[in-house]
Image 1 (cartoon, rainbow, N blue to C red):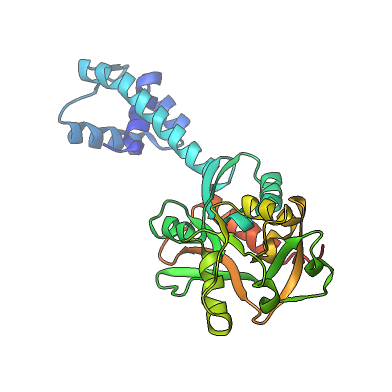
Image 2: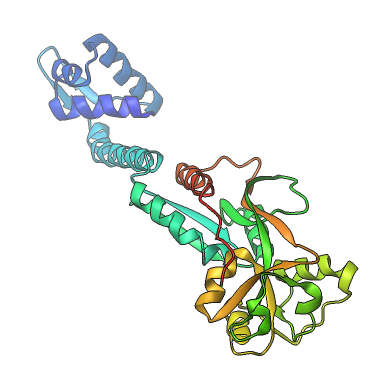
Length: 301
């Protein structure tokens, strides 16, 4: 039993006329009769009683009629729902983004996306970089934004820009008045950073190890906002991706270019290589790539 057969049966059952049903379905009477005959053969018995003057339903036809109405209504609703998803009249997409991106650039991207596709729901998972990778690889989200992974096996990575780590110091610190700060200067102060397994923490430890040895940490937190607030109150200094500049400034801290070594990492979009994106995810990916061309945040106080 298929949809074409059900539509033919319903049309005849409602009109009780092969001629009228054929006109409604835009098919010839012989073709309509063959479709009904095939349905009856598939089900194993007659659904309609035909005479030269009239058409009526058999008891089995009477039993099928309400079921056919319900099945076709469900089918049409399903078709329409999928059509709305494909045309982005409806839909949902999930994205994971590391906090520095989620709290800075993502809202502006979502504003553009919302203006274009107001009926598509977006679920944002604000998680550390390692969880972004895990959620993408385990198909919990279709898209992820974070640092370029060391291995991109089974992943497609689309770079957005190169992010540079900056020093974060208190507004009244002498370092805040310098055009740039070296790691040697920064590490003379109490250092505040994120707790492991944060990618920011791991990158800092990895990149300064050769020149400055093991990173000595005075204070650590799971939240960037806590790190920024501790720096602003004079508890110490920190280093964060330039994506965090605005957030650090709002918390009352100052950001200064950082050298010796300069720590840079590419930030971009990740998705599974073999996964076909939904229409909603594809549209969000397009907006993300488009907005990535926006000017990067300038270092400033």
